[in-house]
Each structure stands twice: as C-alpha cells, then as structure tokens.
Length: 289
Image (tube, rainbow, N blue to C red; front, side):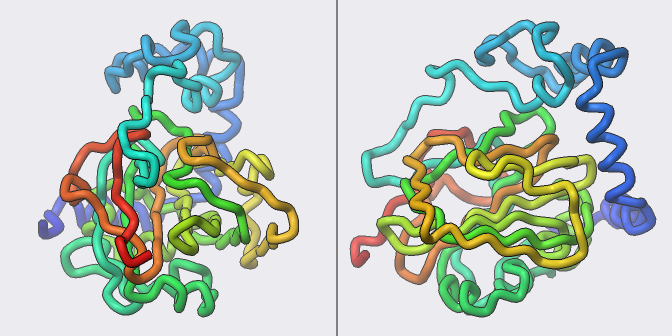
C-alpha cells in the first residue's frame, strides 16, 4: 500500500518532535499516582475497548499508576498455547506488520522501503551474517494490546545489545513513510540460542515508549545514552522456556523476530495486517534443521 498524503504529513510532523523529551514526560506521568491515573486510565479503557475481564486484576483502581495497568498481567488461562510441542508461538498480542524471507541482508518494511540487518543490529556484522537469507517477522503492538513479551521458543540468552536512536511512531502509517524506520529507532536486541539455531528478538522503542525492560536485567532504557551498549550472558546460563515472559514495553511498540537460513517456516496466516495473539502458532522448524 502506498503512503497517502495524510501519512506523509504525519511523518513530517514527527521529524520535528523532541522524541526523547516527550517520552520522558510520559514516563513520569504514567508512573504518577494522582489525577493522571484517575482520569486517563478509565478513558483509555473506554477509548480502546479493553477487555479487563482477561486481566488477573480486572479493577483498574487497584493499579498504583497507569503503567502498572498498561503492563497488566493476564489471567493464567487467557493466552493458552495453541501449538504443537516443537512449534514456534507468537510472543505478543498485536498484528503482523510484515513477515517472510530476508533477501540476502535486506528486511522488507513496506512498499518502497527496506533496511539492512547490519543497521538493525547496531553494526554487528557477525550477527548480521548469522541471519542473512533467514526469516523475519515484524509484530506491531497497538495501544490496546497486551504489552508483555513472551518467548516464541525455548532459548538460552547469549547477548543483549542496546542501540540508541530516534523514537518515531511505529504504526502502519509511519512504516509506510519513514525510510529504515526500525533501524533508526532506539532498540534492545536480545540474542538467544535455540534448538533451531540463533534467534534475535528486537524490541523497538517508539514515541511515548518511555521504557523497555527484560525479566533478567530490569529496565534497559532509559537512560537512552548515545553509544551502543553490549552485555554478554554466555556464562550466566539464563534459560527461558517457550511462552515464558522475557520482557515488556512500558507503552507500546514493535517486536522483530530473526531466524537463520533454512531454520523455520512461518504459518500461512502470518502475513501483513493479520491479527495475532500471544500463544498462537507462529511457525514450525524446518525439516532439515
């Protein structure tokens, strides 16, 4: 789909916004316990038609601040795993922005736009080579979605890379208009070793995404900083099972999954604009693996 005039105007506006400044304000507001929580939370539930019956705590008044509500835990039975034992499952609720094969080292963003693995992975050429000609899926979380992130497959954590960047919106309109959007925004890259080889989970920040955190390290950003940061976990033996929580967005954004060449196949239903839910079957390992 081509970008419309309204898409282009929306993107143009974003270039002029102080992304990080606005996001730091949002961070403070979403953690306040006063008027903002009392007014904004019920409006948000009504506006986005959020089904609170799925939450472990369905009463919004029990959350100390808006961020606690936004990252609310669901009931244990709300997202059953709907896949065979060796299948990959969807790590989030949301929609598929794009999914398919990585063309050499290029990832498709939207009609007329792509970006390189090297740029997405913060200039780490070794990991870029690992995923060359592999498979990718870009999963967009809207404001109304569940914002905890789970493991699509059991894995052992190898490395985490934090890449500072802009905080453009990551909604479909912006993806259609801003070149290399996901390689420009701030992101936290988590590399796991799995039964089908290395897997990258790229947690992409966006405007008003005031914080990204993982279960093993807590808050990774903020602060955003200006340099790429690396953490090596090879000697820590951090293992997370399929469907186990691995992180969360404090406000919404995008997860990009990367797999190596001839390692897995996406289900036919995993295509642009498809709605997905955490726990549904996402794909299956390649028979040659």
